[in-house]
Length: 291
Image (cartoon, rainbow, N blue to C red):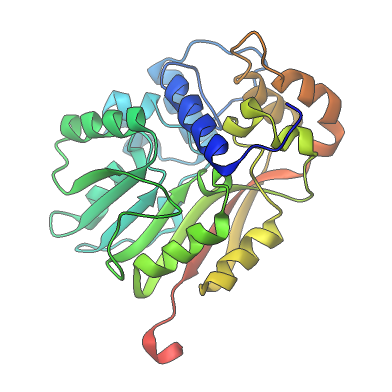
């Protein structure tokens, strides 16, 4: 690809890529194998527990469809202190794994909203919610840059390996501030960079949907959150991807005849290693008396 993708083209690429991923092996939860293999329920549970950070017992309580179709890079609920009765918004909810886990934490008096721009993912999430018997969860089709969510209606915003794919991250964070109640909090797991990646990777559709391109420097990511009005912005943990892990989830995207993910990996291996990681990021919206 020899030109920069437009925002609409990026979003369409993400929609198409994640629709295909519903029937593919995995995305960011790769174990590091450079040869994609068919996903199984037990293999997926192992990946999500050992690589991504979910507890084995919480995975066992979820519908199989939610587990197999989970493509996150972390577990934002592992460092979110959800309480009964709260309202949670999951940006890029996918097949619904984090929404279903959050629904247990907020209980019947709470509510969880899953937001995703991929129709196939939203449909799958609704199926998984029905299978789980989760009546306090709803899934909305929409764009993170213009969320169909009311002002100051959400106590927690969570997100898992999605905001890095948004063309306009600053607008996403402005929307986060808009929908949060004063004092509301943020818990994000996302892919960030130590250095800018070459333009060729950023412009690669396969690498984009593979959760690498679209990511920005960690310092830029955090500053965008602060500029939107969030405070107490902090990275609480980092998981730097090894050479094997990077090769693995890039190779997992090499599912089409014209895919250039492996070519890009071979060309830019040295620049990628040590410069791509999953970060746990927390923040909050100021209370009225802090403005």
